[in-house]
Every structure is written in C-alpha cells, then in structure tokens.
Image 1 (cartoon, rainbow, N blue to C red):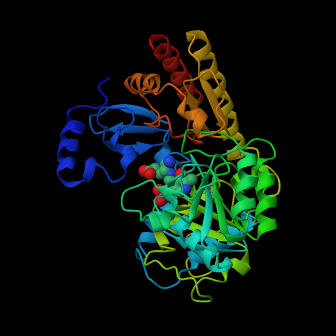
Image 2: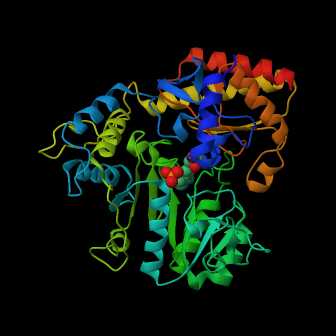
Image 3: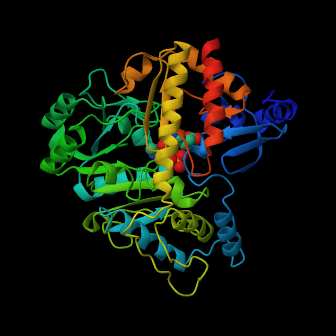
Length: 452
Ligand code: KE4
C-alpha cells in the first residue's frame, strides 16, 4: 500500500509553498517519523481514506475528539441543524447554557465554566486566572506534560529541578519563562522541595493527571494526593489539564478516575465534537474573578459558538452524559439528567473492553516477535514504548528506541494502520473500532515487529 501516494505528494509540495512546514500544526508534518504526511480525503467511523484512495484504521482520532469515530451521524446532523440557524451570533445562545450546565453536572469540581476555542486558550486562561486570584506570579508544570502553546507553558526545566524555567521555544521572553518551575513527574521529593522553597509565591500547579504528550504514563500511587495536599497547604491553585482526558476516561475524566478534586480544570477536544473548542472551570470563587464580574480579563469572539456547542452536545449525549437534552430545541433550554445506572451499551465499558483487547494483542505480538515493548494504557488511551523498562516519566520515555518506533510506524502505515506519528504521543480508541479492526491491527503488528 503506497499510502503516501502521488496526490498526497503533490498536495504537500504545494502546501510547502504557502504553509510553514506544509502544515497548520507541527506534529502533522511527520518530522518525528520521517517522510511526508498523507492527506485525508474523508473519514468515517474508525477509518480514514487518503486522497490516493487508501483506507486506514485510525488510532489518532484527530488527537482525541473522535471518541465516537469520525463523521458520527448524530454529530453531523446536529451541526447541520445548528448551521441552518446561523453560524455565530456574538450574543448568548441557549446551547452555551446547556453545555455549561452539563459540564458542571458531570464534573463535580466544576461549579462554573467558561467556553473558549482551544485547549491552549483554556490552559493559558486558567493560568492567568490563578495568578489573578492569588496575586502570585510563579507556577509549576511537569516535564513531558503539554498544555498548549501559551508562553508561560513553553518552558523547559532550569539547570536544577528547583530552578526557574528557561524558554522552550524561540519568541518566549526569559522574563516569562522564569516564572515557571518545571519538575519531573512522579517525583514526590522534588515536589516537596519545590513547595518548601517557592510555596508562598506559587499561583498554580498545572498537570495532565495522565501525561499523554510524551507517550502515556500514569501517576504513581500517592503522587496526586501529595500534590493536592501541598497545593492546599500553600494556597496554590491546582489545575487539572483534562483537554485530552476529559470525558474520555469517564464522565468526570481523569479526576473522576483518580478521585482528585482540582481547583480548576481545562477541557477541549471531545466537548467540541471535532469543532474548535476549549473550556476552563472550577471553584466559583476563582471563576468569579473573570470579567465581566472580576478583574481577570478573558474573551473570545467565537467562544460558545453554536456549531461547536451543538457538535459537543451531540457527542456528550451519545456518551450518555446528557440524556434527554434536546440540542435541536433552540428556544427552550434542554434538560440534562445524569443516568445513575450504567447502561447495557455504556460507551465507556465498550472503550475499556476494546482497550483491553488491543493491549493483550499488542503485548502478545511483541512477545512472539521477541521485541521489548512497554505497552501502557488507561481506558481508550495507549502508547507502546520500544524499551524493556517501565515508563513513569519523561526521562524514562526518552530512553525508548525511537529508531525502532519510526520503523514500526511506517510498517504499520504500509499495512493500513495509522498510529500517532511520534513516540511521544498517545493513541486513541473510539466506540467505532471493531474487533475486526483490532485483529487486523494486532496481526499487522506481529508481522511488522518480526521485521524490526
Ligand atoms: P489545543 O490548543 O491543541 O486545542 O490543545 C492544547 C492541549 C492542551 N492540553 C493537552 C493535554 C493537550 O494534549 C493539548 C493538545 N494535544 C495535542 C496532541 N498531543 C494536539 C495536537 C497538535 O498539537 O496538533
């Protein structure tokens, strides 16, 4: 299968003339795996079709939003219905209220929420809000965690774990980066030392509860509990970045899985059903510091856009998060009720079952090929590192064999399976993946791993 065929090559050559690197987001350029990207003509369910006519089983899922598969009929219908009423108003519309009520209903830590247009915007706004609420400037983030491209968050660790950060991108002033301390994830001693040294000037700590922008690894027992206690003791705002995990790892995301109550949370991806979206929310006393109520400014022309709200609501409705909310009734607010019983066709139970099947198959494939692979998974999110050692943080992840990953990626692509084009990204299952998809994937993995 020549997945990157002549039409993709021609499109990429033209794209290079008008778009930096030929793409609108760097990871799409395949720099981490080599070669040029293919172009997609259309997508449906768990499959993509390239402009050269090749069909691929998709485990990227547009980086998380496609939890129900691509071109989900109810999402498409909801967007079409909403579009008939207009695409943007710049004045409140009923769906903004329904979406806000749903998020506040499903995520107990969120008392108030504000919609925006990307995960980046959600995270940078949450940081500004925490700084405005506390009157402090410094923040903590963890290496390997990605929170979008806001200046305060494009920062790498200083010389020592406790020193203030340095820019991790050109164009970020050192004066911005110095307010960010970057710590190793899953390191309680570094965390305690940072709070002991900086605690009184820390506005916020932001983290992915399940870091999935360096592959995928999980918090060690006790780490999140320690973080919550230290933040509380020092009056520091704890921000859970659930842009990727929100409504994916369960109705209340990763915080629901781990029983953590953050002060603020950020969201994106799934709540837009594939349309541009972001949101941040949490304790009302913090959120009420936002304009027009309070002194922290934040705004957006397309925030709460009716099409994105309609798409997101259609997605969440199918995830059983807002049974009965009538997203098409624009004049009267919809109802949101939370099903108490786990329904027979609970999508999260399906995602867990598919994830377990993929994990078992991939581990068997690696074992039969005699290739050391750490296959790490939580729910419908996964990553395979080419290493024999478990991965608990970025330093561990960096020890994996990226040359082998590149070979594996291209071998799988040629076999009709599209994995994330970087060792440092997570893979995603959807409710649209079938047992046949997984069997084909595992069969291809066994063949490709034997060739490595
Ligand atoms: P966006 O600005 O891309 O909507 O969201 C930024 C963001 C924030 N927080 C987390 C945990 C995220 O994973 C992201 C974005 N995820 C990447 C994939 N690792 C988006 C893909 C891309 O950059 O093209």
